[in-house]
Image 1: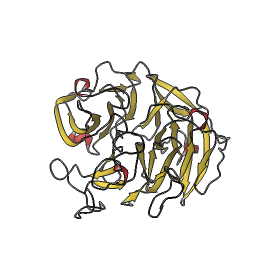
Image 2: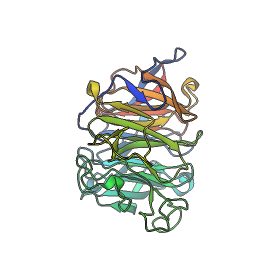
Image 3: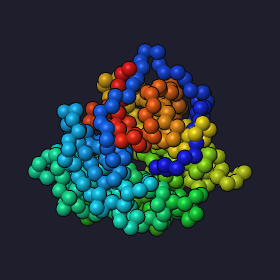
Image 4: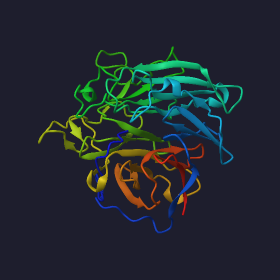
Length: 378
């Protein structure tokens, strides 16, 4: 997540698609229904499989629960004393184990007291609405040199593996060249097996497992600051929204089972060579959609593919936004081509910091104003 202002665009560019935004589908309009307010920098919404509750991540270091449309006063988890909060740092996401109903395991991604990236497992207590802070187990810790580009998402994939998105370590232009360095975990998407080994195992199929060519945890390289990625389980696709340097924001779409993708940073920024007139693009993945920094846009906020049941007209649309510009857009990705690009008028939502998904596939938006919204039919 990059919260500093840089830019927005009125025109969207998509590989293999028209570069103009289509109006919303005539058959449906959308609106943002406020479901919570007064939160401490909400940055994520999630739910365990088959669970009607919503869990809201507050960047300051708490997780709150909405149950029966009410925001519970007592936090599910409060680790504010352990979280380094400010700017892009803080408690950034949580992921519920696929068997959460029986093992009560969940995983949080946060910046620790020294600025390091920490992924820890916690266990919910016998009281289902409260987790045990003393149950923490460190799964992975990664030294992070600067305050920005922390990545921040932990998400279980359709294969049951835990995926993690790490930024390039911060600074302008990736000064340490971490994006193209397979021997560091920074600037990469990771894939680990938390069901084997202690604290995790390396899944079969990871591109550098059993070799000396890179870190075995790495699934993909070449990201600058992947501020949210998402799996479309129905279509078998992985969407990765990567924050740009100063010109271009991008969304990438690849087959979810495709290992070893190189998203290009810092050889490329979006579809353009970074700091060069020419560059070697061989083996680099070009974005499916990108937009520039006109109109006050600055930082892409990746979302999810809609697979809920309340609004079937938008099934298969991937939703995303820009933190500074505050727009809400979507597109479909079919047969390798971007189609159905839409711009939705949901009103003024402030700085859109993240999206979320409940157990039924309905989508949510978190705002820097301390509010959480549900996307509903207009």
